[in-house]
Amino acid sequence: RLKADDNIADIFKNGRASISLGYIGLHETINALFGGENHVYDDEALRAKAVAIVARLRAAVDAWKDETGYGFSLYSTPSENLCDRFCRLDTADFGVVPGVTDKGYYTNSFHLDVEKKVNPYDKLDFEAPYPPLASGGFICYGEYPNLQH
Image 1 (cartoon, rainbow, N blue to C red):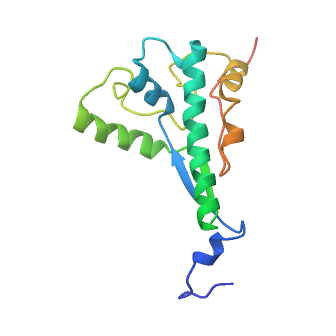
Image 2: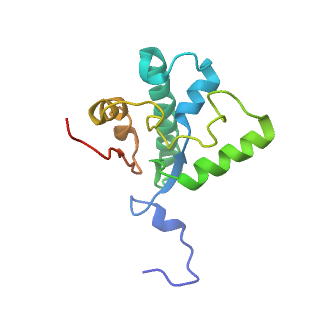
């Protein structure tokens, strides 16, 4: 057990703890990079690009771990406060960008944008490639007030 004035660096070695890289706004990133004419849900090529972005983030944290011996992980962040705050800051700097800042928030990590109306099973299928990349954790959820068929 560490004392109050001990150096904490060693607890990040040997898998005891990790330093997490989190991300938000994958949906908006795809729109910013590729124009937003097609929704990432409806376009297999955009889906592949989105997965490739997250795979690159995972490769980065794995490389940092190999280089330093410290535990780094990729955390698919559920961060409502940052989704709002970062979008407000970006809107102040860049204005309202259609498909990016126009909703007033960014989408959590890899989640399907709530404005895209799909059934819970299709949502889970859409998000399925991402959890294996999230070495630091993730959350999958759905808001469906009535699941009757």
